[in-house]
Length: 245
Image 1: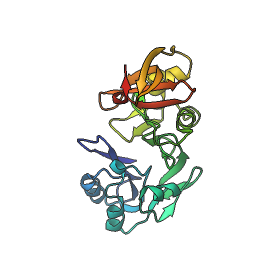
Image 2: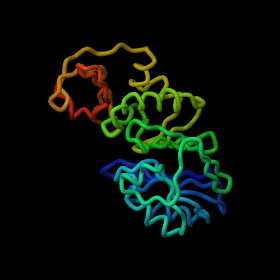
Image 3: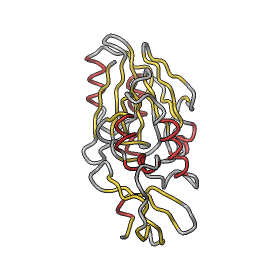
Image 4: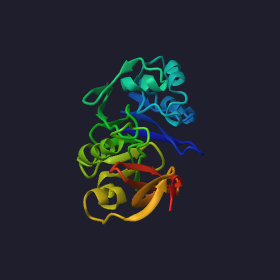
């Protein structure tokens, strides 16, 4: 399988080219505004691009998706709710669907929590593009996931992504790849949810609201990500910059 990635220098967001084999077929997944190398790689491998796939509607992942689709004359596929976020969607996809492009078989996994239209894509059973749900060493924030964003994020990670075979390669929406096995053992959020590590009890404030700092972990950009619990029992995953300690 051919898998190429570009990373935006500021957003650190990834865009991907997937191909079955040289002279075969392929798809583009997301756009970070630096898709020229992926388009060039598709040409170098003589791939027939069949779809542009969108994992979720956030701007740093969809900058030129519509333009890329027009370049290749192919449809944009995304969750139906991506339209509400301003994404041009030609065909909708949902959990349980399978997208085929030559020898590529791409299973769609619904992974809400970071946002309501969030999807992960499992390619040929070996590689999973997890977008902003799961990263190397951390997880996505839940502010855009609605009132059940945190609970949905935990379910998406623990009941869907972490049940994939341990050797499954994870290709996140930001920064470098990892594996299911590595995140199961090393990701501090997953370790906490597994009951391996204790919760924190430090008092803090989040956007001016009193809370408990349950976990202070790393983020993909070298800063921090936090799991917080508010006085009414609500929980959220937020950027470290939102936490007053």
